[in-house]
Length: 211
Length: 299
Image (cartoon, rainbow over all chains, first blue to last red; front, side):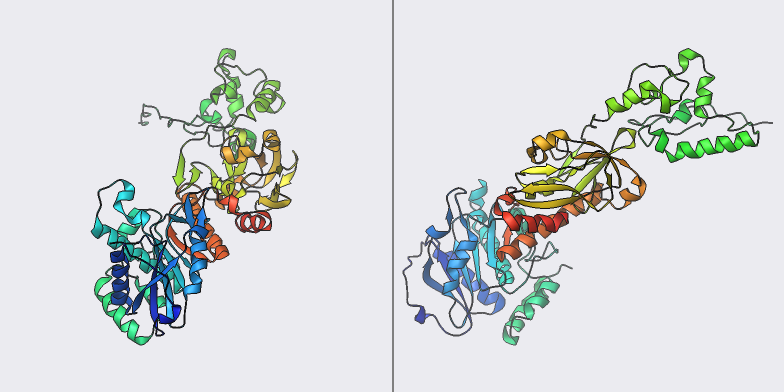
């Protein structure tokens, strides 16, 4: 089901600590936005809100490459950060890049409050394979968590199982888990208050078996 | 009863050649490790000293050098060292193995100098190529031992991606002494310049004139026609210990790739989870930014 997006008053956004999830271009499936919101709620304990604000498409488009510049998307997203909004996560169906890479699955301000995740290369159809929704959602989860980690100041991790491991190809994303390794977890913990930490820690201790 | 000598022969591994001392029958087994550059060979010098000592003590064993042994052979069997090394199919020694004053030897040396050894396996470490058998300096210059003990020098495929289209390449003069780790080549682009450091110490014996006219060769064939200069090394063994080859070189390029992502990400203030590095990354670098980013890796 495609989400019909319309511009809303920024004042309506709640003023307590939350994550804001919004679409770039308005072509995003509502289910993906809802799942991402639920995931972040479950994993980090941060309430997340779906925004009906649409990050405009045109300004970030690079005609020569036929892709969108993630850096420009992030720039135009920074205006969405309101009091109480900890981080803004933008999902897009378009192919994105930053000047160093041919393409990226996601990008985030370093350090900053905004992150963007492209769904295009996370779909099996992109690799000429039959659709696999389960795998697609797993990839979305990992990429969203990875970019969120960057916004909290985390850099790439050398542990191939850690969600902060840098994915050069989609197989790297498939290989890594959707959890932070012990080292990244401790770094992330510095940025979260006790309540969030308890939520994150309970799952971390149960589910990250890799050294 | 004297033990009967073992009958048999020792195989010379493929791609290797007998040392002249073995060829002359003075030693039973020794392969050449220095491309028949006997004047700079430590093994040759050590055996010559041994022969000199043996002659002084009038000992029968090790009483003759390889050249003296070869001269005992009939003239038809006194083969030239370039025949032993395989550079020529047939050549007999025209000057009693006094290679230093031999015209043919000089002629061969000159002929051999520009001949570049073929590049073997080129591995791809993510987006960047690493040639096997090449030694890499931390400043991204490579060194490769070639015939006559000389060392050819060029730049890594990694750094050529950052350099992009160069305006000019200023090479050292022939005869110019170079020191490992010291700046030796000036690479210029749009009024900005970076200095490439020498991977080995020695004296420049040849420069690649084609690079001066066509700097794009560095980008096109960094390990082949894009070489920069040739050095007569002075401390090769010591210098090579500080360079990276094989798996070490691959690991080095991998780390440099990560460093490039970090440098560029810091510059852009963006962290990304993403695909291969855009090998046209130089397009993002211009002017002072080019100088500072490239300088970060070669400097």
